[in-house]
Structure formats: structure tokens, C-alpha cells
Image (cartoon, rainbow over all chains, first blue to last red):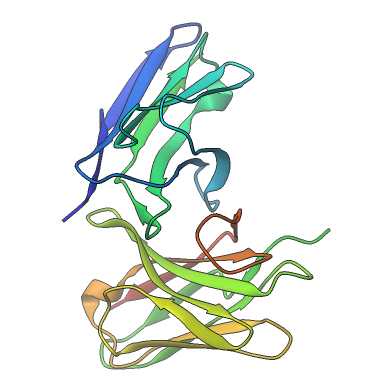
Length: 107
Length: 114
């Protein structure tokens, strides 16, 4: 049973559009990590969020950790084809990963 | 600085056989973790080794085992292979043990059991 639920499972958008993906759990996490995995590669850490309510920005990516530290979101502004990949969240309590959101950005 | 190296990249084995996968961490990293990734179950934690000792273990049967050598290189062994063991096996290295330290993943070994 996945303790971390990610939505949507698949997302296909045009270049330039904005999008938000979600990571939800019934458990409280001390911190949560977001990774991006490209085809044929291992996941690469994007960010670690630690404090409830925290917002972190990484260029066009904005990460938010819920106040109760049970959920998180990733917002991408003006998506580009290079953003294509599998976005995974992981609860740092026990390094349990969500199933991921597979994003495709079409040029 | 070289990244995490996993060998082999691809492997085909027959049901009932055993297999050993290798992971060389980033120089200076002492923690190596192993994961199994499948389309149905996603990315699942197998175990973590730090300074040649298993520090954490996921919920996998005893057929899955590992070890770490004094140079921090790690091997993972799966005995009596089953069709369901077909997966991408990833290892990740980090400086320290514990979940809060940044992990760097290798490209993985894709194992196919026929």
C-alpha cells in the first residue's frame, strides 16, 4: 500500500502551459523530497522541504509543503520540453516513494 | 567527479537462477542504498549499508540480500529468481547514513527474468 499518493498519474501538456502536481499522505513527515527521473536515468533530487508551510523556488519550479506536513505540491510555470520526466515525492521518515506523476511537455 | 556506477546495465536471467548486481558509490560516500522500481509498485526501498553494516531494511523477502565492502562498493544478490523480480534496480550513494542526507542515484541495472 502506497502511503504517498501522487496525482495526476499522467499529465501531457503543451510547451508554455503551467501545471501543478500533488503528493498527499495521511502520515506526518519530518521532511519530504521531490525527485525527477528521466528515461534511462536514476532519479535526481530537486528539493527537500522541511518546515510546514514552507515554499521553495527553483527557477520555474515552486514547491510547497503543507502546514500539517502531510502533503506537498510542485508547480511548474511555463513548462518546457526539458521538464518531461517522472516526478517522484518521497517521505523522509522511511524513504517511501509515491508512484509518481509522468509529465510530458510537447513542443 | 564520477557519479554512481552500476554494473551491469542490463541482465537477462532464467527463473530459479541467482544474480549479483554491483554499485560503486561516489568517491567519499559511505552510504549505499538499493531500490527496486517496477511499473506496478513504483520505487521501493530494499536496504541501506553504511560502513559495511546494514542500517535499514525494507519489506522484501530474504531472497534479497546485500553487502558492502571496505571501499564502500556494494553488491546486491537475489537468489531463486522469480518472474516478478524483473525490474530496474537502482542504487544511491550519500555521504552519511539517514534519510535527510542527499542521495545520488545511478542509472540502474535492468533485470529481466524469463
